[in-house]
Image 1: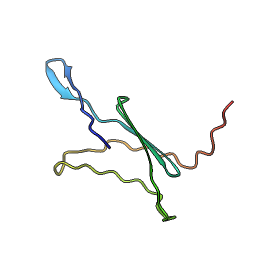
Image 2: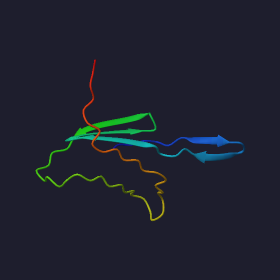
Image 3: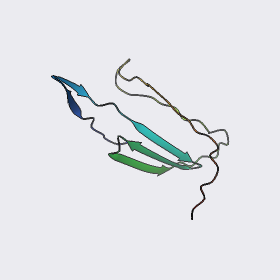
Length: 83
């Protein structure tokens, strides 16, 4: 991906770090990633492997440093008709 700084926010007297909210869109060989509505990345992924249909999540820091709270997946949404 790329560097993305999470903001530190005030909640009363406490400082809390904002949560990372990712939206990932895959359409055949195009992948788009949006982070907290401030960062966007788009790339093309080429593969000859017909079974390469999955998405995986991982975090690189230390064990237990990331927690996935929710994942939503929509499949086979069909084509989008434009006016």
